[in-house]
Image 1: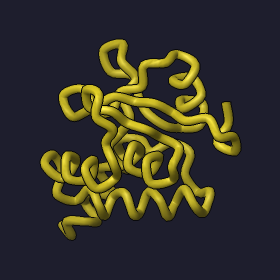
Image 2 (image 1 turned 180 degrees about the vertical axis):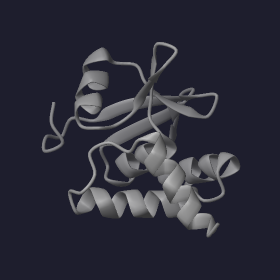
Image 3 (image 1 turned 45 degrees about the horizontal axis):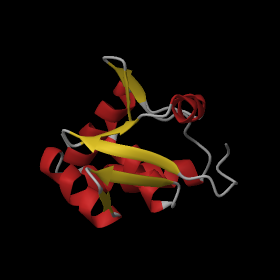
Image 4 (image 1 turned 90 degrees about the vertical axis):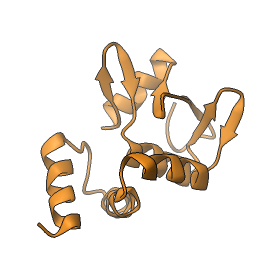
Length: 117
């Protein structure tokens, strides 16, 4: 599987968290700096799922319903009012090839910059 192929990554929203269930896809994404393991579940960060959905690489379902970008953005906004800004910064960094893995410190720094504290 590669981003250059037409392979589609499938995920599900469980408790408003985007999960990837397929083990091969989990490894593929993890090798490319996406997602993290939480209690034996591979979860994408909200800005990662928005990025992958925006680029057409991810299809995400809530139950049997396919979720589009705007719907996922609204779901993410309920948990983080700055998610759109985080997504835009993340998308820009990925497009420039500058980002492989966004760790907690970088996320906290980004939140600091967004809020202007």
